[in-house]
Image 1 (tube, protein in one colour):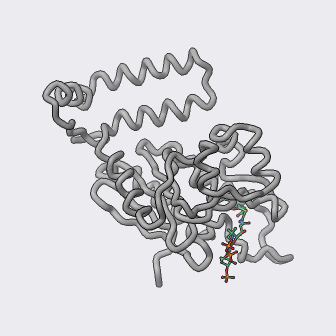
Image 2 (cartoon, protein in one colour; image 1 turned 90 degrees about the vertical axis):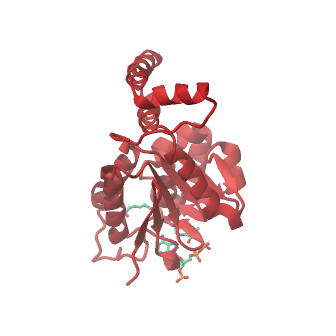
Amino acid sequence: MTDILLAQTLGAVRLLTLNRPERLNALNPELLTALNEAFDAASADTSVRAVLLTGAGRGFCAGADLMQDLGPNGDRDLGRSIEAYYNPLVRKMRALNKPIVSAVNGVAAGAGMNLALAGDIIIAARSASFTQAFIRIGLMPDAGGTYFLPRLIGDARARAMAMLGETMTAAQAEAAGLVWKLFDDEVFPTEALTVATNLAAKPAQALAAMKQAFNASAHNGLDAQLELECDLQRDLGNTHDFEEGVRAFLEKRPGVFSRLGGS
Ligand code: T3D
């Protein structure tokens, strides 16, 4: 039996590959459980300094598996699966004190798109596409879509994308600010790993503090945010990484930075 989620450790990067290519990596309970467990494991493993999330085959993720039984005898309480799988997963991704790179290798639809948006840095292959497919099946965005989308691309674009259900090409997504960078398809896996590897070599405590601050800025006012920055920077000023960073600058060499809670 093939693993529904491939988890590989490449140096300090934990590469997670959604692995149901024949269903465009649609999310069923087994895959959602595996993802939840994989983020717990990445959090607990101090040797992991960055997570890279991508899809096998030609899709990133087609959202919820629509082949599940939704007929008269099926479970129509969608809230139940959202509470059990999607919401914990999105919360875990945001709370993880290590950066997540969402590497969107192909189509990202519905909750699959929104999982990508829960990452810290979103990159995409030029052939990738993004769609809030929910409206086509009489649903609304979940998995954080109504939270992330307006913050990333603005309220006007977010509403239109969700309500019209149109597909955004990778180039449009880059222009709208949904993704940070595009890479040619042929080099996408290599470039995605390079982004994650670069992140993994950076000062882990500074990255964790940044993630905390960016998460908080979604709901903080300026005063609260300035105070949070001050508190976090005070802590960072006492780290070995700060000492090392300044020393490396003065000695004109690259810094060698520690992982979370260790060297
Ligand atoms: O309780 C809960 O779970 C609630 C949570 C809901 C969250 C949601 O995500 S709701 C939204 C669910 N997703 C969708 O509505 C998207 C459905 N898929 C599509 O619209 C299209 O497949 C795509 C736009 C993603 C890609 O189109 P295309 O033309 O590139 O591929 P395709 O031919 O449609 O799909 C290829 C295969 O994947 C195909 O199987 P086949 O015919 O080759 O055997 C197709 O059925 C399968 N597939 C695609 N999406 C899903 C799927 N199988 C199961 N579930 C899917 N979501």
